[in-house]
Length: 162
Image (cartoon, rainbow, N blue to C red; front, top):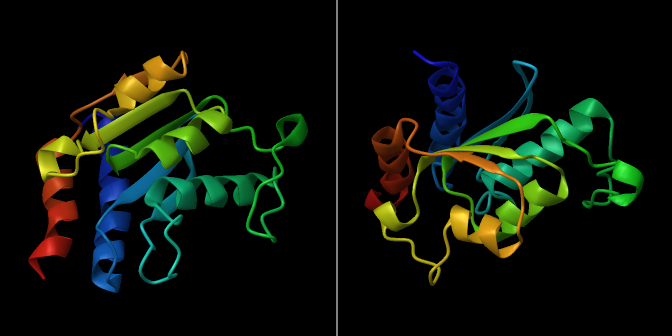
């Protein structure tokens, strides 16, 4: 098993938890220097907040763990690099939506490892892909795709079979 697969399996465990709780089965971990610094899962339904996606949940967790942002008011202080997660790699079981991709860019995460793709599970946002977002904002981001893709897509789709 590669490191990518090992970290993706941790993200999948978080996705399993999200699914059991009534949310989309999507999970995410953020890794820096081989250590998980942030964990998140989709909580849109349980928190009744459309902005709590796995990626934004993991970003908030990482910032809190590192003490780099005051999230008490629900928003990170982005001044003076306070929300800097540069050098980290984000593992997500599904391709991030544009909102999450923007948050990932704003916090300096420049390596994204994805399991499933939105298009593969029937979720189409125009011509959006993570790659098209990166090209649109002309960013230097490395994207690794297809890590345990079929398993990640099946995890996300379980929500719709209930």
